[in-house]
Image (cartoon, rainbow, N blue to C red; front, side, top):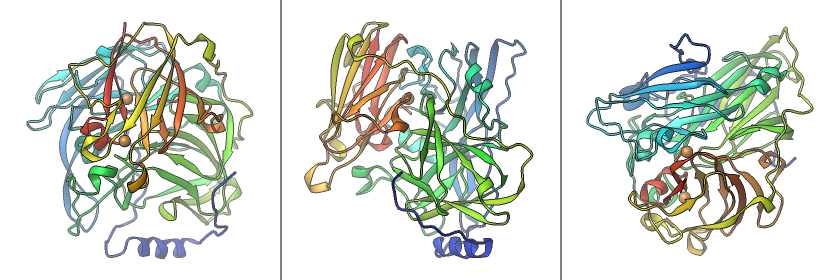
Length: 466
Ligand code: C2O
Ligand code: CU
Ligand code: CU
């Protein structure tokens, strides 16, 4: 257990006035947490699923009764949850209704062939539809989807294009954990935005955004500022995505409540890890169990990023079902370093517009690394950029089409909550992270920094598995 905790709990009026104080001049009305809809599978066949997604322009009021231009999937901001099962053959029809603008849709964390992955090679012109088909073959996990057009990913995600993708399997079926979507199994897409004085946000890069990526001082959860969720005195499962362009969140509850992390990016951990603070870089996910049965009826619990509260849980009466934290969750076969046929080095370098990996900026016509299908490799990722003058920049490393196991960080074993499947991991300034994976999906894939402004500036390369 680590991290500072204040041991206070507030009643609802105190919480209300505190959150008004946090909002400063702005008038935001606290609203119930919006729950994204579960997207309907229109295919009647039990082993197949078909989904329809539309990328569209929209508008939404966040603060000061002012509408701001947004983008969304099947709506004005963010998108529905796509829920698939292991073994299912899935087709997703993605229509681009964005005005005069190319997009793509990438299934982040999904182990599919390069053709279905939705990276920058799979551009969808305005008015066109792209329909990848793939078979889901990986453990239950909370994944996500977002656009990936070259040099325009940051802007489209910032405007609202992102959604969650759940994989379920026999393990998730059998675990005695909360799984009623929207009731005790709650998705939280956490983002930060910069609102102008007039209440709009736009995507405009100035210093220091070019260095750090676009960070903001207003937190959104599922597109809402400072929302509340009514929960019973029971165990709640939160599926948290850091959906920000560039910010690292340090999440904790105000009232000294600890929680258990049960899943990382690529699925369940072998066993729950008790924590009082969760550090999550851009695009990392964590599933946690929070036990509200220890909270008195009528109390509120704040979810905080560092010292800022950005969401409230209003604890209501008793629940009918009492979940407990399971002793174990799943099995994960460790990939042995001796199985690796080679080690590759990736070095994050440069600052601002010159950010790069191994001295190279992204070139869609260049394959940087070639891997034999089925091989196991160790990737050694280090962060040489932003040292000294700028105090160092953290870079989250992500690769498509594969899930890694973290071997070590500067030679030290990873923290217990990083001992599961990872598709994105933070690399601290000066740090070297060694990871291992078996490359079972053929095709051309991206690896990049998931600070989207760094990715768009060229901190990205391509690997081909064949
Ligand atoms: Cu979340 Cu290359 O992407
Ligand atoms: Cu990805
Ligand atoms: Cu970066």
